[in-house]
Image (tube, rainbow, N blue to C red):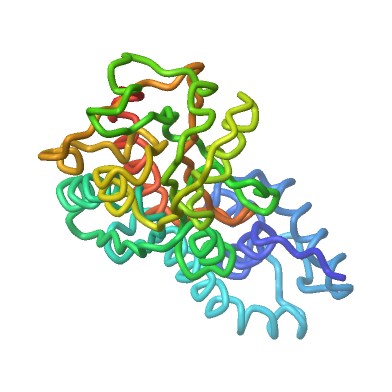
Length: 303
């Protein structure tokens, strides 16, 4: 296979225009020996002589004339193509599609969308609100630019970046015996009836693991898809719950006779940004990726 370089073609183009190695070199910032070397290398790659050298000037061979006749247009087209690609680095207009799971969609992404609209008004952050497995599927299929998820269990094909560590907390009715404590040990949940997020949530796997690690055998009274429904069940006295701190917003708790307690030892869930491994983010997408991380970094890390 030929290994012709852009530098060799540029040198040949200059020699064709100047008809002299020294003048061609001066025009493109090379010495006369460097010009001669480039021409020899080009002729060696093509297996043809392109120039006839004389003491005063150089003359094109038939092969040289054939190449020269096509070269200007080809190099112009290549330069335009490279300029177009280079221009992508400065693109700051368009849509960035992001998928996230419900708790994150409700309690993290609104601030991200507002920040994006303020900082980058020509970029539209389009949110897809999906359960965690569907978020991961959308990322893997290339349907979205990146996802915001809870630490996935099998991320081998994904590039992951942690943007927030937040603890799990106990939520119970204010008249529940555990509500009088500032902190509650995981093992103290043994024998309790729990209302939990279902297994579509990225948090459920972590909650089950924490209960098992601390030998807290519980009865799962209900499994639900959204924290708001969990709060209603707890209010009705159906059970207590374990939820991530991000779900415990003032709006969700306002007007509810509920207490929130720290669980000890602290068990965190990691909120992560994910995209397909070995796929570079477009500059516009990288801006939004960074923005989401900055917004998450400004959130409180516990209760």
